[in-house]
Image (cartoon, rainbow, N blue to C red):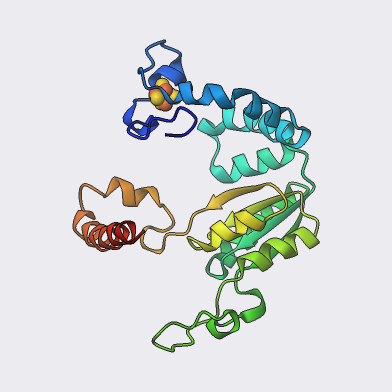
Length: 226
Ligand code: SF4
């Protein structure tokens, strides 16, 4: 247990109503208790100028989100946060959608610069990633370069458009400008990742169970090896 965190209980075990609606009915193990030790540190972060600007913009844009599409909310957020130049880190498969977004942002008065994931055309062998099968495979994504090039372009805010799971993790790790996500890529559900959750107990249950079983075997085995 670290910092008063109860590993056996998290917000996922709670309805979330007590903290959202201030009902005063927080569970005894409420995660808010563990937050107390970090309160001052986190408050100091919010007081930093950039973070304050982002939070203030999000206060306004998220208050309207019930009536705005995420595209509208992104444009509104960019305006409120004072961005002038917007970077788009796009998957090549979503370059058409990114072009539409770029056009809308330009119409809204922003400068736009986009970098596609396959920039540089790296292959597995370039990054010493050829697997046992020896297959060179298709051109690899290059999320660190996307982040670096957007930093070189001097973007004030970046928007992720469908980067792969994992590649997005590296982009977020190396992006210099604050980054928001417009599209989470999901080839099976037309980029509606929540559909995989909604279908978890119904139509997709069987296929999902195969993925989970294979993963569990690996995760448990690696835990035993550790
Ligand atoms: S912070 Fe407390 S009340 Fe809110 S969801 Fe987490 S456990 Fe529940």
